[in-house]
Image (cartoon, rainbow over all chains, first blue to last red; front, side, top):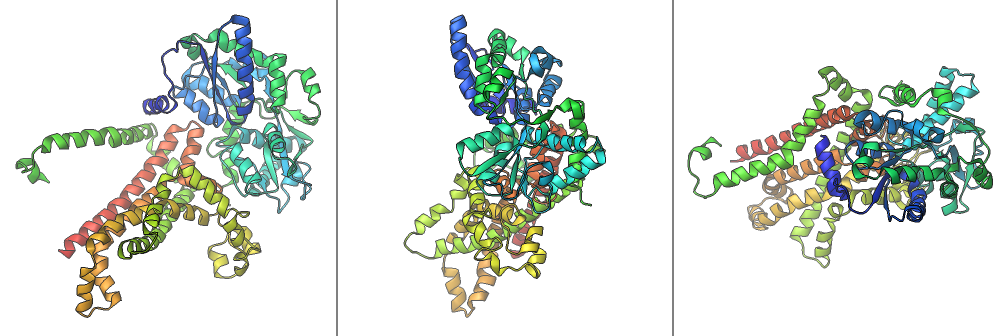
Length: 331
Length: 302
């Protein structure tokens, strides 16, 4: 099974497993970071040329976070991975042993140089008066999240919805479950990825609120002006998209030094500024303050606060026969 | 065919060409398929049965096989008609129409899916007309036979017909991609048939209906069945063009190929291949049944 997939990838992407002569770096990322890394790659190549004199070609590959992780496991030669959630990198570490299990501790802030959160995108003038989480589960409201089984961003959405219900109800699991059941009962279309959900909401006119990545919502209103508004709930989750060096691949390509600097530079003022410009919340408080008008104040809880760990969240909620599957069981 | 193996064939190169055929089939078809079964073998029988018979998976078989069968049936009727018109009549633009038939083959399936979805979504040209309040949708009230059998819950309240994000939309997408199969399999048979047989039947006093039923249909039906089988098989496995219009709601509009992708996204390779093996098995049994039916009827005809 592995070998055919590997061969197919080599064929389709034209990636040569052998070491390339001139320095090149492959960043395997997820969908909504396309614009971010397009800009960052150019700036980093300049920075690397200035500091070392070496010319570096950086390639980014984008796709669903889980799909990308699977490609790396199956042999896609990523030097670094920048994915939507830590669980996907955990799985790479566990299944392929290409990087150590404690990869998240190697860089500051859980290896997440930028963060995001889960917000609502509503139609102009907010005709259904959607202001907070409880407005989403009212009868007759249509909401568009993506499928948490197939989309990393949608998993953050699910955890934000479930987590805020837990916090609002004094950690009552039964009440949180009742909330999440009503939440998905109001979903008319369940797209497999975040971009697909945006298309369904924006282009097809389905639903009253798109629930998902803040960076996607901000991106949508900046490119389509005047038709939509962003609604930031009072409480939401701190979504931490992590980055990591894929040690064995980088060592094999002889790119460890540049790959490490590529990730560290994300934490620099330049990197943080690019993240903020592309609608990701920078970790650097000074730069976050500079973009305060773009990022509304919201009380953020972390995944660890409510679900202890990704492994736990995955097992309880998203695995087969987990809470998400139970929601859809016929009564 | 044991006789062929013992006696020397009159045509030279039999063993070479058979050897080549077997090698090629093994490389292209058998190795990937056995890899699929091999991967599934990681599961115990119990796990396999659980994986392929959970309620959600069963609901998706019902949808995928049901929609593919309905789409195949629609294509048989429409495809036969189109093939007939293209073969029997000469009119300006015939070649263009003939070329159009292949478009669903040539179009990338994702493009087809997005196009169909744009058209049939509630805010699209056709979807809007059929939605409640639309020009055609207002003909369909919230009660009655259609409401019982065709409607989604929201249409039961409001009336109108929902196309995209409902089983109807999935079926339309499958009709779209399956049409060329029926036309292209029936067309050459009709061309070979020629009008002479019909003329002979007519001169012997058969009416049009009888001519069709006793002269034409027995000749073309194996081709029609093949067309149906191809359209059906393509429909069962179709992902790209369906996933955009399906709505993807578990238990309601989730097709089996999507469930396989979902399992893969969760690194459940064995679970994904288990469903794939099940689909393969069901499709193979159905295709085999159609093949046997054809063979049986040919033997009876002789």
